Image 1 (cartoon, helix red, strand yellow):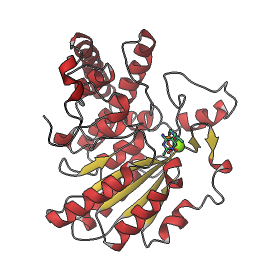
Image 2 (tube, rainbow, N blue to C red):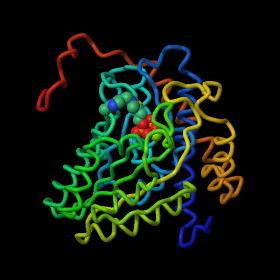
Image 3 (cartoon, rainbow, N blue to C red):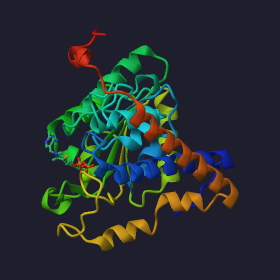
Image 4 (cartoon, rainbow, N blue to C red):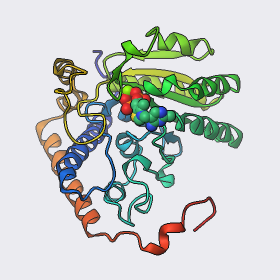
Length: 323
Ligand SMILES: Cc1ncc(C[n+]2csc(CCOP(=O)(O)OP(=O)(O)O)c2C)c(N)n1
Ligand SMILES: [Mg+2]
């Protein structure tokens, strides 16, 4: 893995903090889940954090992201509020979707986190449409679309690539390739593993990052985004990564028979959280860790104490323009 050239100590501190917040928040979600206070299914991204963090750290607050039902990392890495996320999972009115969406529908427009969806692939064209609006706006903002390897099997993925390339839209396409769609591996789904080759056919520059190197992801996105702000078109990243827990829910699933724990252990050995943490001195790291534990405990307390939405809210916020 190359050394993190040109990064300041503040960059490293911030990236570690983001990785650690996502990891620990999701571990706590997994711990709390059996108590049934969390009212929605949870798709955890423990092990996959480096992709969201690497990409979002190269964006500004004005840039826009669209994520998926496995979206805690995208939401938090883009600056979404932890209290509002936790309350959303608990189904409380103080949640980021007023408790009506749950884990799969995180949204925070003040941080330019577009609403996520459980329907695979659907948020890719939303990001492209947003990128069209951003290009017309002319302020140099960009959009990033996060999606899984399974989403690249949807027709709308290819329609989105074509449209974005044709109109030179400022989109960072980010495929989080964790090798599985639920329990089905790539080898049973893709006639060819040359995903970047398929995308390159649309005239889009591609990057394949096979080790989840958070600094490399950040550097590639930062360079590309600087050009997009001057009028360049989309890029595509295929980021290899690995989901450590089950597809949906708080547990591990290595006994299910569709994959081998050794594969996860290989990824764990290059865990980006540990890698970046090792670049910090022990005092700084310890201080960040303590702050994060306090934030998470406060978020769970906030979610526990918040009320459920009142019955009158059942029909509000259903259509655009409704209060
Ligand atoms: C259009 C559509 N088809 C099928 C499903 C069922 N489904 C839910 S998650 C999932 C797997 C998607 O895998 P991937 O895109 O690789 O994302 P990951 O869960 O690995 O992050 C499937 C097929 C769905 N939600 N939407
Ligand atoms: Mg996948």
